[in-house]
Length: 113
Length: 118
Image (cartoon, rainbow over all chains, first blue to last red; front, top):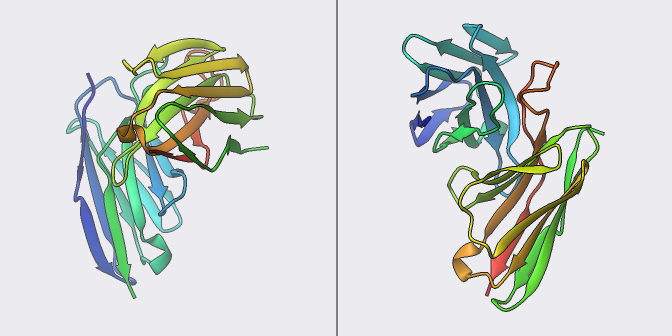
């Protein structure tokens, strides 16, 4: 079955710096890769996602890159702000017809003012 | 309406109690999910309903009993829980993968029910 590894588990950056979180998946058939942000006591919220037919996607300060050959994808946050502090989860979704997200273990991001 | 709602927000119950968690969405999604999330861990899938039929049960103990009365509602009935079942219970919904003409697998999460079992 699919397995997703996520690194680092914690990440501290200075406000204004960039943050990068990396995930590796095992099932080459997985074709959808969402990133969720979860603030303390709140629901996971989708911040960006990417499909396997795309190598990069950007939304303002957030970008995701996908390397299908290496089976890894990364979240990039530029110009970090204190409100970016949260736990970030990556996930991999096997092909259509299945519903399971396989989540990574999470990264706690702290943006220091 | 682009929200998934859950009630109650908090629930404290004893090990002999019977209670239910409720989830509702009006986005026309035909797949609905129950997740359990412990502190500092990712959500852990429990059940998936597709078109009101149970399609995935991740070997969840029978003290958790899901129910999908219609396409907008999802319940989780709780009975004889253990203290280790204390967690945040999240509901989510999405378009089913097979039928979606919309190319989206996005799962929308509800705010969760914080459950404490004494």
